[in-house]
Length: 186
Length: 186
DNA sequence: GAGGTGATGACACCTCGTGTCGTCACATAG
DNA sequence: CTATGTGACGACACGAGGTGTCATCACCTC
Image (cartoon, rainbow over all chains, first blue to last red; front, side, top):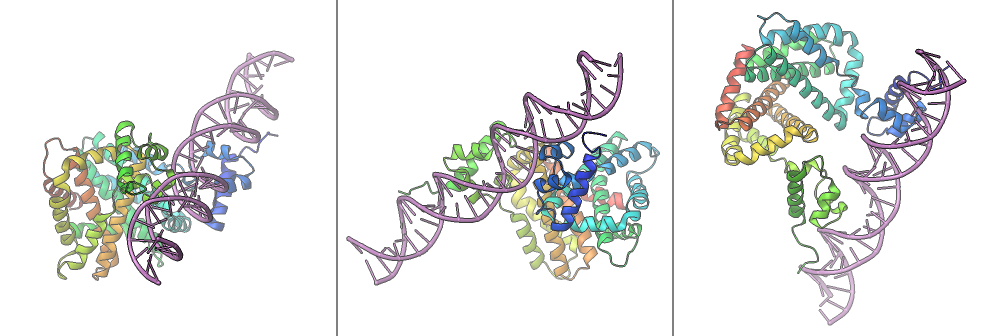
């Protein structure tokens, strides 16, 4: 029998999520969270650098993206790599958890502090993509532009998907947004 | 003779900028700033909602953008409006202050807190553009997509321009980025 | 059983941001 | 000339975010 319950991090996360759902993100303080989880404030900051970090789990998307860029065929075009990666992500990560993802999106969009962090996450992904492309020998400007378009495309499609009452699959939204983008720049 | 020097806000801004230049943004605290400006901490927060707000002046770009969307000819395509607006902005706001703008860009890119705020500013512009387009009767998805592309295009061009040692004009970078984007999505 | 390790509590500290109230120069009205 | 605002500011208090430091104690290893 341990001195402390062994799942402190998970208890903190659960307590935080409950409170966020009950009273909203802004209205719940770290003291509130740690009280419910039965630990001290200091312990919270040992597990999460930030109150926002409880919401956004560990950044696995950029890691997956970097991996995909490494293993993609050398003759594959930069955009095609991203496009294919998005389809994989849609099928494996997003579509199976549609309800949770959509709910989280709505919370993010209603809380300025979370919106800010979300934008930062997008910028991180953009940087990872651009760096990965350059590592593949892509011209720097081209790398930056493809990364920018890819992230904006994914983000826009996710917004539409999360707000779509008809339940259209994410891949369909991705395709629609891609067509719109191509159309605008034609 | 006034009880207080009448230019408190400007003194605060100047003191802050000096300190940012001397020790960096993160390392200077509001107490530091107010001490140099000769006022109290409370007074600082009466003039600026935030430490970051000292850096980014008032958001005039979104206001200008909204105005341009209102006065643009009804038959002008959404992207053409943004494109034309960017050329105006480049000529009137950016090119004349290249040195300052480039220096500010470098500071922003080196300070996480400022990067975060910068991303927020971009999101604000994106929202203003999308809303303006919808007000002109543009389809919601199309409005969102054009706004996203336009902001990303401007942002990318600004980055290239600020980092360009050759001093190529901003309009030239805008054109390059536009071509790259069109190429990627072709 | 003698350490070593690692997660936690306890405590102190600073910064951010905000509410509230008193104060005093200045302008204006009577 | 007096009275009465009206701002801008200082003084004070407070709660939340975050971080450094040290003691503690279950558990593990030798």
